[in-house]
Image (cartoon, rainbow, N blue to C red; front, side, top):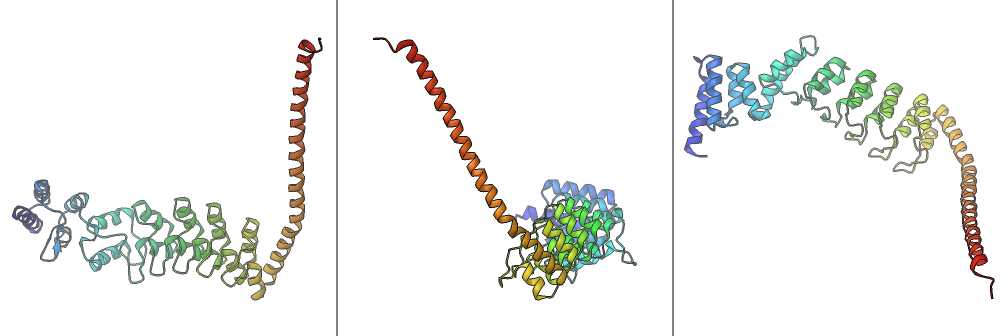
Length: 324
């Protein structure tokens, strides 16, 4: 770093800490120094420009300008950012208004900072099913794919708790349906585990993979069969979930229903499997008949072409041939 650069950076810090300067005058000086080449991410005595600005409580316009010019998000310590981000919530544990959150963001709060459980503000809002809170944070740019310490996203958190309306909002908004937690489970699997039929329907309609496997090779259908969630088993099976897929132990969903004594699920899956087996000879016969039909059609077309060729040959033979 050149001496000139160091001087500019030091002057930038001095302007930030100048208690006599008005917010308007400070903003003008900061803009001027940045134009000259002062580094908005410079650090002095262990502090960054932005953290110093926030610490001194300078006008929001200065903080916003520094961020617009590329001041790094994590210019303040994680502890400081977390403390500021706690301000997103009121004393009753309700998320504050979008405008109030915007003001906190200007001061250096960060929506992606995580608490002791690894939860961001969005995941925390999802945990309690706060639809408006989730929507507000998402609109402000919160990362909907952020994961907590267990690898769960906001969508998974919502799915396991049956918050249908908020699941619908995130799923239709493009949240990753196939993201997996530390156990290799997707939002669909988590919902299936808890027998949340409406949530399962929503995720399937939005395109969730029915037969994706977790770390143990289990699918959502297997989990449902283990837990005896009959209506959800019925729904997924009718939607085309694979009855024959096996987990790491070579067990199918039907095997799991039998193993855990889930009579309704077992009976339904057995009957469905029998129907599938009964359909196989018929479908094979239809396929064979279809092949014969295609072959016969081809032979007819080839025969017609040959007849046409012979007719044309006979015509020219009558004209030019037959004379000695």
